[in-house]
Length: 264
Length: 323
Image (cartoon, rainbow over the protein chains, first blue to last red):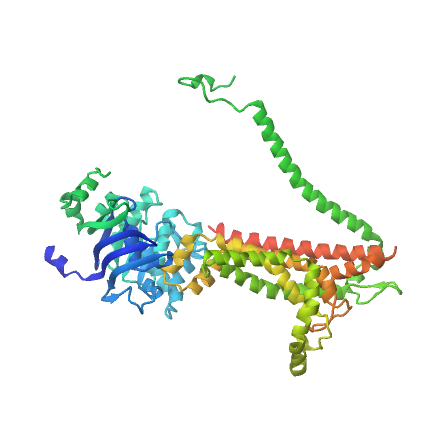
């Protein structure tokens, strides 16, 4: 297991020094490597910057006014924050699934085909859409109503639709920002099963506020905490390791306290 | 006494609303209902009054009134086809121009192209356009727009005169200057209502588009605008309705001429302008005729609005309840 682990390629190597929103220092000093074929879970109390770190990986935070990133994020060796890199390009290669299911007000088919059309995909779009929906475990439920609006689906189905939309263009990494927080336990379980199936092919980074979820699906777990000593609220990475080690044998006291439910 | 009074554990705090609360409730409901009915009754009365005054003319001229092309008070021959044509032609042209710029402006003002304060300034200026009296627009059209477009119109007529749209010269007032001014007049309506529609598109939908690697224009054209389409369509219908009924500026700019022409530069007339210009001198025999024309204008406006609403409900239904 251990030597196998060392050989796993790091797909995204995030060396974050500082992240600012305006003058506010949101996250500091966090080195998060995301390994190929793994699910890397980000856990921690609210405000610890786990979402900020996740969204820094595909430059989604560039949409936020005043956002500034210091450090670098290497994706297959390329610096995502390089001066000549267009954030739009980064987002085409790193897919994303959001907290709230956010299908477009168009048909199920068009939702999944959106990324393909955006990339001017020349091949068989219908085949790709079918494959993506199958991989997202949604095909059987929607195969007879592909023309129906994506908004007509239930919350859990909508989220699987969003996953299908994200993986239709086959990005190597999919970022998931609390993908189950708006879903009921049954839908949550389906998405979790799906994540485990998807990691065969895709590398996944998962933010979750649910420790059990991280335990159930993540191979690696990164624990973030909030530093309020300087008067601000600055998040940082406390500990990162195999999920089992983080939950059973945490090295840091903060992690121990959080896992045992003793967080302040 | 109510059935729940004995359920309290300690001191009785919960209680039913008082008689006064119920009375206020009923009063408010009644008021709201009365206001709603009042509007329907006013529209109904309007139609009834105009309709009944138009009856003598309807009996005399029948539907031929709608297809006749002469308006001669001395010979008592009346037809409003040129005015119907002029109304629809100028309004559609204004809608095409004003609608395009209105929606574009709404996109520009809502999609973070400007710092918030500058956007507010722009928005206020656009809204200010709605406060300018229509007679001022008319003067502006005559003294600014007409001289400005005349050389262009002359050139187009000389070089491309074989195209029906450029078939005549611009003698002064005409359909193009009237429509241009009309376009500016409907711009604030279209821009304001479209802005509301665009602002209602949830942020997470934009995020989804950007997350898939859409550029800003791709996100706007392929996701945001389609999501807001029902509201934007409503804005266009409202703008069109406004253009159909606009009177003063058109009375000054359209040329008040009974012509049926495809040419953008030919003078023409609209129903509203016809009414405004003829009422002051209308004799006993002309009033019913003008009422008939007013009824036609009213029905066109109602039809446009109802058609717009129907299309809107049908299209939004198809994307919501299509299980």
